[in-house]
Image (tube, rainbow, N blue to C red; front, side, top):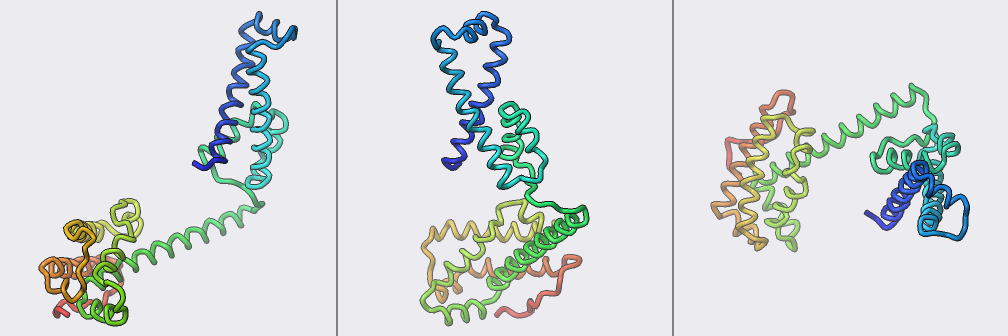
Length: 250
């Protein structure tokens, strides 16, 4: 939470306390009488005065936020009419609950078109992530590709790069896999991820150079499992054909 968010949260709480203080006055006639008489400022009046200032600041913040980010939501009239009473409710909806903001006027057709474009963008992103994971698997499955990558990047430890590329996709997040892969694919990918993580923990960030790593049993196990995973993805209904030659061990 940023400093600004902390400050606005304090103003939000102060606004609620200010409203509760007025309810307290309604049920405490003696306190109401003393406050209304104004014979010197007692403790309650002092607290009420401070809460009033903070509540006013909170109301101003809500007006600013609405004008900048939510101007077409229709809440301006409520903030003006009920000011400090409505401000906490508005703040809760847009900041805490994070309801969608309305900062542009769109017809029903334009709204539908915008939603369609957003769905296309999400679909494109999912496809890119899916293809990226498959490409990393293809790299793990090919000794030739790994060697060529090392030859063209001699200054980089390709072994470490292979582990890091896979880690970048956050396979351990179930929601991500559910959006991108089908059940059979997810099972295979999770198994590959498990084996790769186990090997990564054993290496403990002490990654050998590629020419040493490819002769180890660990590399051979990961290489074989990468091929099996790609075959399962390839055989999934609706998936595009993958150019993987399983009859050879490159």
